[in-house]
Length: 340
Image (cartoon, rainbow, N blue to C red; front, side, top):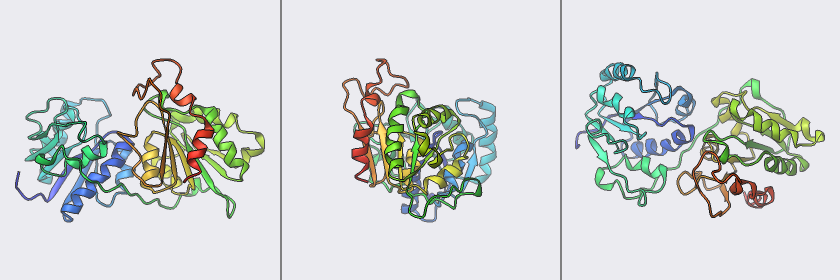
């Protein structure tokens, strides 16, 4: 494994937040070898993130949907990538199928955690000690270093992204000194990660009473909860409320988050983007844990109740009471938010 590494193929993660954290790996690789070329193979929806990471030489779109095995497509793409003459592949997902393309591409060094018993597909295989390397970002960055250091928690550069000018379609006027609150009420993981709409609304009303403007951001799947939030907001404030859930591309969402004075979010991909943009951020955790995927920015506040049944890491509350989120009142969140 002592050969010179000039060109690396990263098999990227499927989720937005994970891809944001993967930038720490790209930065670590560049720090050790500024001339190394880093290409990232990932699903199409993560491309707007990769396009904003200067460490990435080229984003290659995975022609397979998330969860699809696609043996023939992986084989064809792997053979096509042989002409790129990569020196190393780093495979971030833990699945067996994610290691196929570098193997088909005949990349000589194929680095990754053991995952689904990937012996042979990965020839620089690492066995993870989860207690020694607790953070996902540390697990990514560890793969930049020799196997002998795998279970030594590495220091890591934080992800940093720069927002661009908001497109004309989403340029929303606000007063000269009007602050902007952006709520990200969705969570792809499942409903258990969503703070209740009524709580989001109470926090929003507090800011609207102070003259703030409110934007809601999220995917098409988040339209329902965003509409519930808006129903709780008095009509006198509706002119300062803009629901953009399901209306923006990811690139637009990134640029809009860059205009925020404060973002309040569930544990989600948009949360990780906000942290990488270095915006004031309050993150509400329920069934998941900031001890695994925290926001990687010093101006982020984490709010979580200590409940005896959590964190359970379940998509829906197994107890049926959703206490970790329902008992986390807007007053508690406001007290933490005011520190930002």
